[in-house]
Image (cartoon, rainbow, N blue to C red):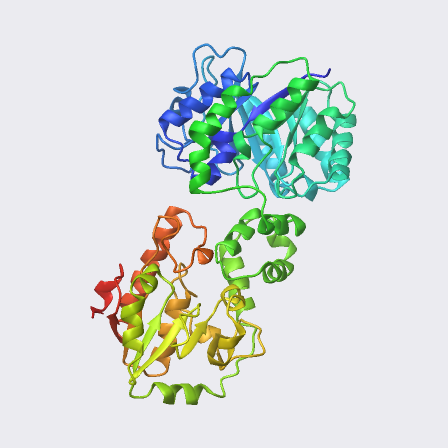
Length: 528
């Protein structure tokens, strides 16, 4: 059987799932567990001269920071770091030492090819084994990839990689690149494959890769439990199990299973990764997976709408994630709908001289339902629920989210106030989406804030709020119905709350806010 090496990249690729904050004890446990599992190459994290070092994260600016985790007895294993081209200052790179990092993987895009090869040459001169990582390998034509291979032959790196950065490769794509490399790369250079799992093909592609006839030494990248950005990577535990059955070299899966149970699963519970429809769509459109994450985190789009936005992404913007660009596309898409506000005057007249209460779907709306029902039953009160139907006693329902609109019963559609981004035939009035957004990117189209701005725009001077609780880290504690719960990381929740506070503070200068139910935002109004 051909020689196959496994490179585990949990501490590097997996870092996208926890902001690289593994913590010293877990870094040590993962490295020890990988050695015990007989993993051939352990990737310990990123090497970057553009970071402020923190001992708990797996990003390093000096070798001494990572070398502390490498055992004195390496037991024949190699330890490597990955450096993105543009983040490494060769003058700041120390020479290789016997007891430290053995190799550096240089990841680069096609536009930086020539300069990246020169950087690889300089790294080799420092004594390190070099891995040539051609990001988004499918972006190269055959002629361009052959040119890269010839440059690699002159460099003579430890390994040359086929990289499926966006998880888009099918078997015929991998086969084409494999044969291009195998027939043209010097025989003493190892060939590696780095997969992502957007199409659920990482495992089958990796099996094809190692089963293809060749005498060349191969390297397969894996990560524990597939831990990695978006759809994640090839699972270490699954591929080791496969190799144990087909290869002479013995691996030990049990230490990996223990790491999943005792370390990695905790990270998964806080920030899940793996196959999803948004990640599938990013692969379908051959775009950076962060575009899928960005739109999915909005929690306002259907899959069809997300697909339509991806259709609009220009080719030159596909490879590198551009947050400002996708934000502009999102806002442009949301503002396409037509306004139908012929009954807006009627709505304004209905509010005239009345107490206006907005009911958001926070937990307190359920806890204090009796109090709210008593208040809105008064003849001088107009009630508007936000993105959900509070009940028959509610006068109107404000909806800015197509998903929430789909959950409403047909019985309430005649009292629905829609924003123009939602396509629907039945409603009371449809108002301009763009008129209601704010300038805080964290919450610029939050439904509760949009409903408040609508009332401000209509000249309302005082409102009552119920169910505007703020977002909790505790799962199941954010909404009146568990079916409404959304998946957020804790830092994302904190950002939402901070954004809400800042916008509510500004709005409280324009409209008097009175809270009917408990809220973390009560400082920006009065409690009733």
